[in-house]
Length: 253
Ligand code: GLY
Image 1 (cartoon, rainbow, N blue to C red):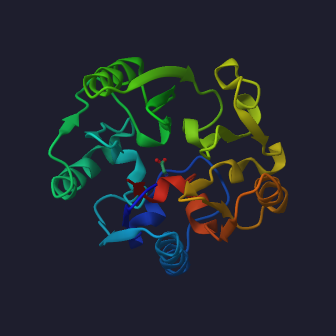
Image 2 (image 1 turned 60 degrees about the vertical axis):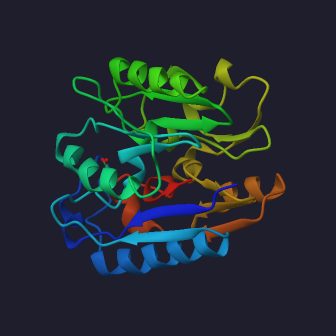
């Protein structure tokens, strides 16, 4: 179970955020409304939510998940692979010092973004992507092992991050799309297949028994509901324009 989440409001500078997807520039006012609804949903799932003010210096800083990996025993501050995002870690490190005695840091030339790390109990799958390199994964695994956890790597092909295409929903269940549906790493899991034409909705999050799913993806929501999860649908259209999703918007611990 999670008890807390940290989020950061999107700044007006989000219009300069990184984006591969060409589906328009985010509307900041609408993003604020969607972000507030996201916070309310986390609270409704029982979380104490710390809402950080927008940081205009970093257009992508609303995607706080990429800046740290939070475990029961330690926080690991990442080193984002995107140059424009590296500075996001400083304020997050300061915030996390209120919650963690043990804080580790990924050091250059290692790069890691939190969106590439999927926690499954005490094991952490780390996606090797354009943002997370092998040295970064090695460093994270070494830190994890220091605290009694384990980690392993897997490759990320088309997606921005590992969790763009696969997430763990507890109860031995994953939601996966595309390249992640038939991975040998996931043999033995119940795999909820998210259709390719709704692949964005694979980035859903389990929060204390509920699953938050992007609004507008009815097949995905149905698949997850049919698997027995209460589904909370949230409109995150403005964050999608920056290739971000529901998991990217919070650190949950
Ligand atoms: N726009 C989010 C990212 O590329 O990291």
